Image (tube, rainbow, N blue to C red; front, side, top):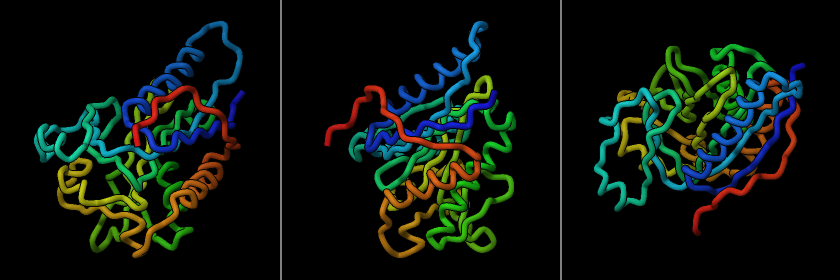
Length: 240
């Protein structure tokens, strides 16, 4: 029986590694349940939302040459760096950005990775429309884009990992993000297109909570799911 209930967990501001470890814990818990021959209980689904300290992450197919500064410069600027197990190239996470980690058993929804990626994009496209931003897909590239015909610029990056139809990693929506941090990388390995944020497009700071609430609403719509908040297991928070 398909379980279309999703547990929402807001991790708040958290360093990258503890959040990665936490989503891995949930990811592996679901996979273990699916591979246990005696199991008859429906698998669970999770949506984690958070905001990271400054960090660059390089996907398994990414090129280290797309990190444009040295290890010493990373330390000087207070930016962490991790090679991780999602698809895609290099991206930035930081303050003013909403990062979403859906840990879903796609057998509860649709066993189709293409459908899953397009559904994530649809959630963000609908969210941005509610704030008066016309966003769309760009053929051949993942993520959500602005002004695709004239001056394409990415407002939301995406990269996922799947195993046995269970997902992890996800999306990063630039809300009030300090875009200068993208100057030290070739974002997603794409050199000829820009990066933007909701704040830049609208010319004003946006309330993060309003955007999060809108994402949750559209996630429930697109995935035809029921979403309810639940408690978080112990997770190490960053020092202020």
